[in-house]
Amino acid sequence: MAGNKPSKKKVVISIKPELEAYLKRYGRTVELPLQYDDLLRYDSCIPLLDHDGNDTYWEQVYYTEYEREHLFQALTRVYSLLKTDGDTEVLQHLTVARIDYCTFGNTKPFRIRIINRLNDNYDHFYVKRADASRIYGLELEELLSPNSFMFFYDGNTMIEEHIAGIPGDDFIKSSLDTTVFNQIRIAKEFVKFNERCFVRLLGDMRSYNYVVDITPDIEGSQYRIRAIDFDQQSYEGRNSFYQPKYFKENNPIIFLGQEHMNVPTMIQYQMEERSLIASRIKASIRRTSNLFKVMVKDQISTPQKVERLKKELGYHHKTDAFSECQSMGSVVYENLKLVLDKDFKQSTTTFDFTRIE
Image (cartoon, rainbow, N blue to C red; front, side):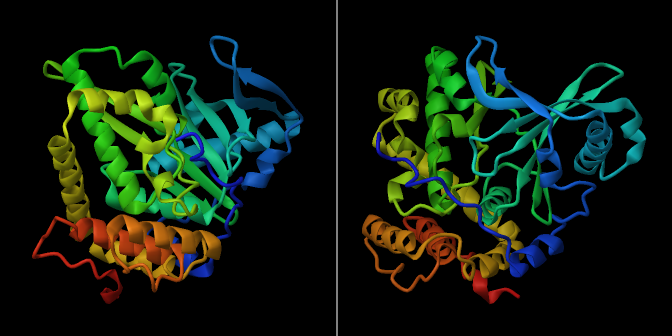
């Protein structure tokens, strides 16, 4: 859908004390040796190009010798917090190989490349401005999706691990011309991915905002689509914005689904994903409850967007259940309950999160 884009660049939403208390309760806060603003003191930069000489929208940044010494030490310390729970024994082998900066994203991330001097193996992590929408998105990813994700918060700064996979746009260009068996599995995973995004209202899943993880399997491959951009967690007011199938960038995968799947098969895959989400909620009901208690009281979008999404979701579900919602958090809560209850019942499960203390 050509017009299915964010209405305008999203503003960074501050972290309220209630959300900060939730993050502290569940081990997401840590005292960092540096803050996001420290990385802004770079001395120079050059555009970072891909292997074909195209602009990547990233810049490689350079620091003075004084700044570099302090930053590199702090960044290797941050990496140890992500990977070894702060064990400093690994630090003697690690160094920062490169720092990249992107002004394209809402949180204007820095990408840190850490290299092991013993074998030249490298890894990445990200330093970003703290944003409430992104934090809610990451927490819902942890609770409702098959993917686990490590991040830390401190002050105005977020530290995030790197999500490995083939960027969705590159995958669509290079990997769809495969066996029919694999094409069916790709289409199946996209249906499930679309369902995960819609259930928890994660928006803007154009092909460059997710990656594809490929695992070789018997007589073919298994595919997992993973979101990498969570800035548009329940912010926009359009229902279609939360369904990846409506973005034209994803059309090649949509066409695979139309070729290899019928409607009953697609519904089966949707129901499978809803069942998995319901099971994950049962396994983490207390934490899910505590997250929504904070989220329904937070203001993470504008009243105009909330009202529009209430109307469009009400029309989609043919219900007036959204009429009393006063925030985007409450809209997500109602949508989650409706989607999981619609045509899918689990007598042992109740989705009344607010009853848990």
